[in-house]
Image (cartoon, rainbow, N blue to C red; front, top):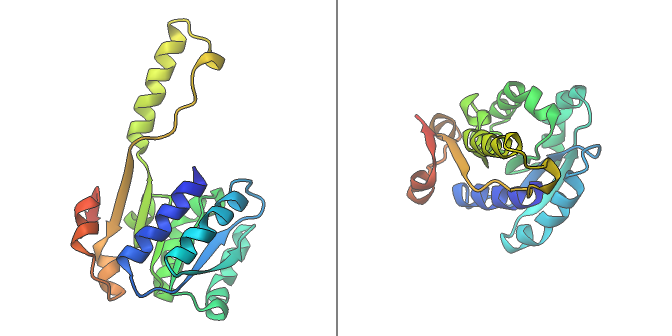
Length: 184
């Protein structure tokens, strides 16, 4: 789902910050989901009149070079694709992006809770409920290989209003109404 989610992230960023023209996408070439996601974002980015600039992060040490990368690429916003490096260092990512004063969105809803701007992702509680239903079927004798693969159906949008205010952004009412949580 990384491809579909990344396109939605671009749309949400553009809705919150209509003036953005260039988005820096943080990605890891070692993550097999990232190349298709980058390809899937190309046409929607052009439709939204966004230029994508890629910054690769393969190791945690690469995070130290992000401010210099941002200075070089001069993005208006940042989108980071889901990757263990970013999740493990999520608090660091929030602090780094706050220091650069760049609006950012992530597939991790914990990101805005740690001071980042926005997170949009499948609902973890809903995923656990669905996993429980799958497990119940297996315990009643279903073969795991016979069960269909299910994609998430419930998603959560979390916005940090304090971060938006610090960045000089006003959250549009349409976005505020759709948010599952607005951190005041």
